Image (tube, rainbow, N blue to C red; front, side, top):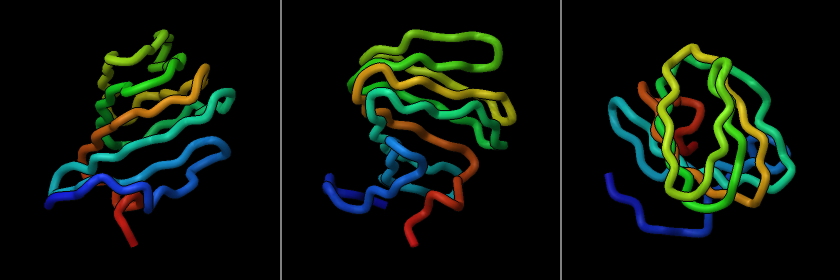
Length: 108
């Protein structure tokens, strides 16, 4: 699968949080998240391993009992079924890969 950069196909996940599925395969889903300053991603869990990279912005990321100040160039890996959430301190863009595939993130 190949995908060209496009400003289309973003969808709202929560207030201030949009996602776009960039590419996906049999075992992974790659997404781009646009996060608005001041929004919060509530703590949650899912069975997918999640690796991420902050392209731009600034956020506080909670993984289990730890909190990290995340700035551009930082990356993370969250095991499946581990609680995590974030507070968005500046408008931000993050790229995240999920395994296995996040079926609910696939294009309709």
